[in-house]
Length: 145
Image (cartoon, rainbow, N blue to C red):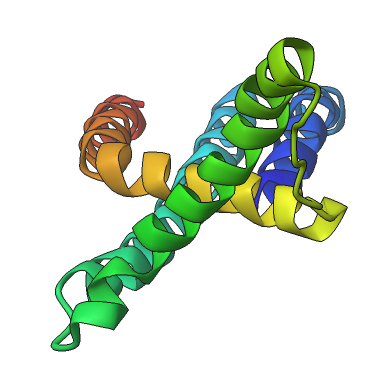
């Protein structure tokens, strides 16, 4: 989703400039640009809503495991990271013994993704409210034109 948002953001600026250059009627150009902005906001809102639904479905699931698998997995990964970078080096320095656990790159990536999902879940409602507010202001601007 970040990639799509990044691409849309990168493309939107040049497209706005092309509209300004290609459309001689300024009112029509403004309507086209407003419609493009409207569609970009709708796309971002739809992606955010989809992510929120998945996380909310997990959080409100019937099974204890369904509700808690992500926090449990994150706890295990954090424990491995804490062991490898905090506990094991100190034990090795003090007692000459320090067991480090393997943390494959895929597990590290999963932790990054999981933390991202957690952050999205915790702040999703605030972001959705902000997007709705922006959308409302944009729609007011479109109506004013």
